[in-house]
Image 1 (cartoon, rainbow, N blue to C red):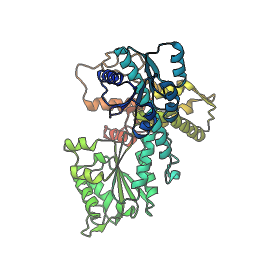
Image 2: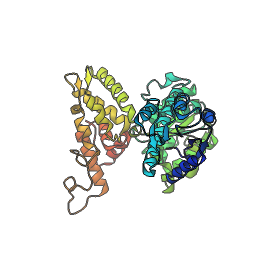
Image 3: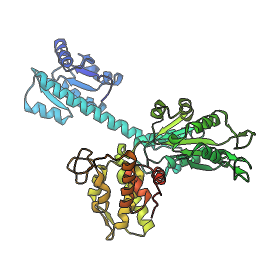
Length: 474
């Protein structure tokens, strides 16, 4: 609902009637009224004020309410009109409703009925206004300067189109960009589009910094000279130099070590760096974009991330909403991934069950768009008759938490689902067991296993490598 209290136009030629209506409105918690005793001025008042609701008396000097009602509806069809009069015959009520009145209340006014009718009318007004604003927004948001750059972004969400406009606005800025959002929302794809829009002549160079210790981070980004460390026999160009006049994309920035954070901060502040083993300062011409699914402010409060670095990274900030907040995109994305999977796997899909869209809309999608893509590819690979149904997605939907009666739904308090030995397992043991089970169900496919666990594939790989002996994709 609107944060500003609605404005209600009260039209009646008798002053005491207007005062009575205002009293009834106050009892309903509504104090903003626009009284009008001269019905000939109503249309002018509607032009000059943003009215949300009209209370209209029928019996007035010309023009009376019956004459005025169609004129109001023609000029302001979005504003609900409630007729309030002492005329109680059915013919008059039907005539008013045919002319577009929202409702009809007779005098003497019952306060409870009056309040309920007013609330219904205002709810209708808010809904109409929101739909109207949404249509205007969608029309405007489609007016992108470079729509061709967004052709692979499958969406009909107004929030996504607002993000696209922001991307166009900041693309040519030399300042850093922070991209945040849950795993699988498309942060790398957004980076690719920004790089294209930036028109920078250099390359887009991505690097996942998760798991890099300070030495690896420095060597990867800054490079080294011969003799910098044991085994450094020749010059190695760092990725900053590789991304000269282009874009350096640092993914999983929330995992960066404290020492590496200091070096990144200096790079952002001075646009300077030194290769390992060298005293010569080099200038960086790479534009830096970073991404994370972590809350950097939360990490900063825990002492794990520098506050000054956050300020530097957030010169421009893009937050991508999860799929659960734009479920109107699920049918579009599903159709797109089904076509993609059918083409790659050489499987023709002739029809999709209507119930499938509804079922997927109820799924929480912790892995977001990436999870939906993995589900679609797996389902298409199982389809043999060309008819894709809920059954082909069955094992992926077992983890739904839509209701307590869903078969296979995980409930932490359900003793039948969790059985612990006398010695409680450690968190690491539980994590290792979950990873192993996900890989087993995904038949060794790490991308699919990661989507089941609600983490990224690199994050899963990092956990696998920490296990004794590791677990490798089959």
